[in-house]
Length: 468
Image (tube, rainbow, N blue to C red; front, side, top):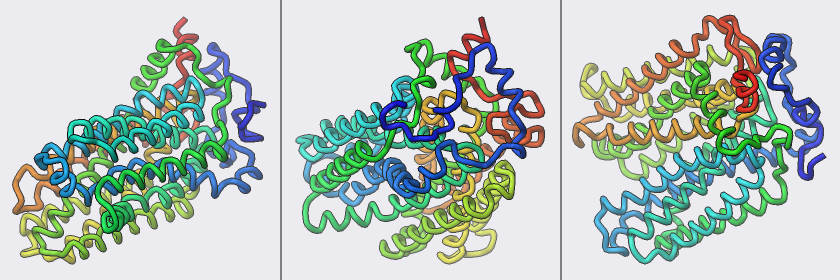
């Protein structure tokens, strides 16, 4: 047994699927109703280390948001300290976000070839170095470069955490774990600006990066000591670039996988629109104080986390994931419609309370859309979880990055653009879900054939075998 591998893993116990039998094996697997809803790792081992695994993976997914949001209160000070225009300093955020999006496309396939631990440890090490260099950046141009490197390396935590979940869990168990993971990672955007503000009370903006460096070192130490390898050597891709391209092509041409990926990406765009526009809408249009905005932002984040826990503990296993995802998209669309009507004055002068209520409902609905779409997409993947996780993460970041600037196209006197972007994103997500996933023809499957003949996307090696 490889060193560090979780004992009793079902992946370790199973035999590799021969290329010529990949389709036959997929077709022969039982329907979901016949499959036991169990994690792929040994249940006893998971009970012993489950909380630790949740905390480690939650920390990995929370590190990049911490790197983004802890830095926000320091932007004015960075502008003064580096004698740079505010627009140029904003590029430090853009560079970090772009790095997180593009880095996933590199690190995800790497983890399919070399396992999860080595790319993750390397990514965390580079993240620590890049973050430390940010603290000593002499000019805004070097800070932008270091922030790009920070985002590229930090993306390892996001993409590999999802791949590890796919290695360990399947079916409803995977959806439950994603919902539980949200309990940890969902706290990061709430507390990060607060931590950043407190750090700035005792030091300058460079101290923020010192704190982020210390967090990175602590996370690296925990991952090194406590997170085992979850991808067995038999399931790694050894074919180099060609193997990676075959795996990516298999994912990109899998209609159902891309349907869930795009639907989740556009749902995430509605969340990005909220993050980008809500400070302006709450504080400038409705006259709330920064403290009130922080309180409302925290309440909305708590709503997202709580609904995520309801999803994992109550809905998953009792209601089809497709149905729960559809309900979530419907709630997002209805909430965005209400915001749009209030912004247009359809109900008269809308105050802060009804606008905040609509935003709370919209944000809470993300607790049943985001974890379920990730689980549904990754259920399609047999042996390319790293590449699949990369496409999921990159598409969400890129679509969200495109949506964010659109919320300000009509100026600073109206919240209509935010509501329009959110409604459009929800509708496009629903179209992708219905047109590509076609849930009415499918019995939601994890590794099974479906009524319209779809099978889970095979690995690059399997595709080569099927094509030969």
